[in-house]
View 1 (cartoon, rainbow, N blue to C red):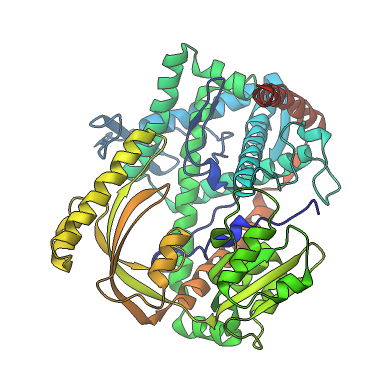
View 2 (cartoon, one colour):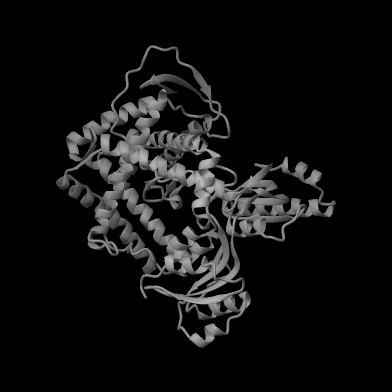
Length: 557
C-alpha cells in the first residue's frame, strides 16, 4: 500500500513536559526551529517557523526619558545597552520599535508597487509578504519530507513530492493542490500572529532579557552571513523569497513572533491555573480511560502476511524478531519503532488509528497478549506488555549539559559527551553518593532536582525513568540531540498523577483556541485577491524551481 502510517512516531512517548504547563503553537513546525543559513539562500526560523506580521501601523514615539538595558547571557552583543521607548503603550527597546515602524512603511510601499494579495481585517498584505509566508510553508514541508525519509528507511510518506512544483501536484484526498495548501496555511499563520501581537499589545507584554538576546542573536547571524557572502541582506532575501521583501520586514517577523508566543503562553497558564480541583477530577471521572497509559508494541505488517507465522508469537522477543524479519527494508529497528510505552489512547489513535487504539485499551486485554488487527490501510501485530494505568511523576537529580548543533561541530559535541561520561564514571568509582552527585551537578549547565513527567525526555530516557523497577539511588548516563545527561533517581511520586496535568493542559488549549477563533471571526476576516495570489505563487515557483534543480543535481551526482 502506498499510503502507510509512520512507524517511527510510535516510539515517541506522550509529550507532557517535566512538571510544566505545555503550550502548543499553531502553524509551528519544530523541525525548522533554528536559523538555517544555506550557501544559496537565507531561511530564518527560530524556536519555531517564523511566520509573523509586518503590516503594522507606525507608532508615535512619546517623549519619555529612555531607559537603558545591558544584555547578558552569552549573546554576541553582550554588554551592549539599549534605549527603551513607548510603542503603542508598551515599553520596548527603541531599536525594535524602529524596526516595526520601518516594516510598516515598507509594507505599504510593497502593496503600492507589487500589489495586495490579501486583506486581513484592516491590514493589507503585499504580494512579497504573501510569498514570504508561502515559501516558509514550502521549506517546512520539505523538512517534513526529509524527516519522513530518515524515519522510514528512505521512504517519503508525506504525500508531497519535493521534486515537483506545489501547483502541479494534488494534496492527498483533497480537492486542491499543494499550492493552495501552502496558501491556506500561510493565511492562517498571518492571522494567528496578527491576533497574537495585537493581544500582546493590549496585555502590555514586554520582552525579557532572554528574548532580547535571542532576537539579537538572530540579527547577528544574518548580518554575519551577509558579510561572509558580501551580499546585502535584501539581496539574500530576494534570492530566497521575492522582490520587495526588505530587511526590516524580515527582522520584524521575529519580534512579532516572540510577542505572540509570550501572550499565548501567559494566557494558557492563566487558564491552566483557573480550573478548580473539583472540575479537573470531574473530567477524570467522566472518562478515566482518556488519561490512562499503556505499554504496548505495534508493528504495521510491511512484508508478506503469514497467519501461521504470526500465531507462533508468544512473547516480546518473538514479536521483535518477527517485526525485524518481516520488514522488507534494511536498517529497521523494531525495538525502537514499535514502542508505544507510557502512551495514551489518543496518541495511539493519532498514529495508528482508532481500531488499533480501541483494541489495545479494550478491558478484555491481558498482559503478554498478542493480536492482529486490521483497518483499511494495514494489518497490525500488537503485543501488550502492561495494561492501562494512571501514571505518576518522579523526582530526580539531573546533571545536564546542552548540545547545540548550530554552534558546535561534531568533534565538540563528542568531546562534551565524553567529558560528561568520564565525570559519571569517576563519581561511580568514588562511592556514587547523593551528596557527591549534588556537587557534581554544580559543574553542569542545568544541574538541579526536578520533578519529571512522562514525555519530558527522549523515549530511551523516558523508559528508564518510568520503569517499574526504578528505585532510589539508581543512576544512568544518556545523550541525545539536545544534551548530555546523568540522572540520579530519588523517588516515584505515587500521589502526583499525570492526569491532572493532561486535563489542565488540554482544557487550557481548548479554551484558548475558542478565544482565538472568536476574535478571529470578529476582527480578522480575510479577503483574497486571487490575481495577486497567483502572481505570488508564480514568483515563489521561481525560487522553488531553483531548489528542485539543486536537489535533482544532488541526486544525479
